[in-house]
Amino acid sequence: MKIVIIGGFLGSGKTTSVIRIGKYLQENGLSVSVLVNDIGDVGVDGQVISENGLESKEMLRGCICCTLKYALEGNIALVQAQYDPDILLIEPTGVAFPLRVKEQIEKMDFGPEVSMGPVIGVIDGCKFEDLMQHSGEAITKQIENADIVLLNKKDLLSTHQLSEFETAIKEINPHATLHSLSLKWDDGSFISFADSLLRSLKDAPHLSGMNDETTKTNKKVHADSCTPEADEFNHFNVSSYADSYSISDFSDLNQVTHIVLELIESIKKSIMKLNPRFLGHLKMLLHTESVAFKVSVTSYQDQPEIEYVSTRAHEDSKITVFAAVTDIERDNLADIIENAVSARSGQLGIVV
Image 1 (cartoon, helix red, strand yellow):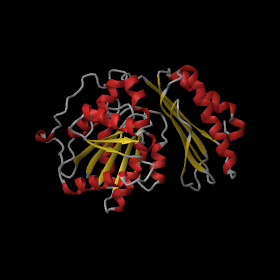
Image 2 (cartoon, helix red, strand yellow):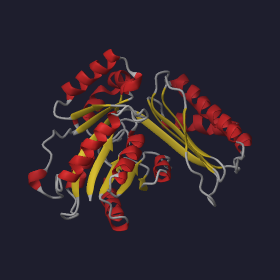
Image 3 (cartoon, helix red, strand yellow):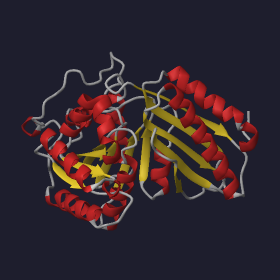
Image 4 (cartoon, one colour):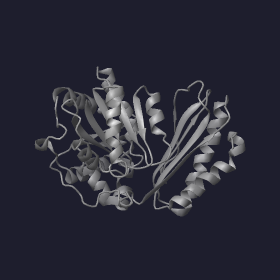
C-alpha cells in the first residue's frame, strides 16, 4: 500500500482532487481507499467521496498533524486490514501542514508493504493573493511541504495572473513539480498530471519505507507547526463549527434547492458582517431518499456551487452544515449557523 497525502487550504479543491485522482487510478487498475480528516464534529466530504465510488473513512474533531496524530496509525492500519488498497489517499484538514502528517506516518511501523508516495499540495489560484496576504507564512509552508503542487482554477485566471502565481510558487519550492490545471474543467491538463502520477506510483515500488532512516525527508521541520499543546489552528486563525439536523423528505428538487441556497447565503452574509473578507469553507450536504446534493462557498467573493450526489434508500433524511472560516470566534460562528437554520426550520421540516 502506497500512501499519497493531498493537502491544501480550505476550499482549494482537495476533495475534488481526491475524487478525480482516486477514480483515475481505479480506471487504470489500482485499488484506492481514502482517509479524510475534518476539523468539525460532523463530516461532509467523506460522504461525498463515498458516493463517488471510493472506500473512505473519516477522522473528525481535530487535525491529524497534531491533535489526532495518535489516531492516525490505527486508522491507517484499519484501512489496510479492511480494504488492503494499492493506494491510500489521505486528505488532511485545510489547516494542516502535510509534512507533519508525513513525518508521523514515517515513524509508524507498518512493515515493507506500506510506503510513502508523493505529497500533493493544492492551491486555489483565485484566492492565492488573499491567502498570501492573510496567512502567507502558513501557505508558504504548505507549498514547501509538497512534492507536487497543483495550481487549481487556472481557467479563472488571466494569463498574467497564471504566470505570476506560477513564478511565486516555483520561488517558494523550486524542487516541486508544478501543474497548472482546473479540476472541474477538462482541457487535458488534469490527464497530463494524472498520467505522470500514475507512472510514478507504478514505477517506484518503494518511495520511502516506514522506519527507514535513510529515506526520511530532508525538508525543514517548522517548530511552530501545530502541536497538541497549542491551538492547532492559530497559524491560519481559523474557527470551525458543524452540526447535522434531521429533516423531512423532499420530492420537489427545485423547492429544496431554493431553501438551501437561501440558507447558505444567509450564513455567508452574517459571516461577512463580522469579517467582510473571510476565507475558508462553508459546506452543506442535504440527503433524503429523494434528493441529495452538496452546496459550498469558499470565500467572501464566491457564489454557492451545487454538486448533486446519489441518494441512499433507507437512510435518515438530514442536512449537515459545516463552516471553517478565518478571523471569527467559534461561538459567533455557532450562533450564526444555529440562528440561520432555526429561521428555516419550518421550511426544512427540521425534527426537534
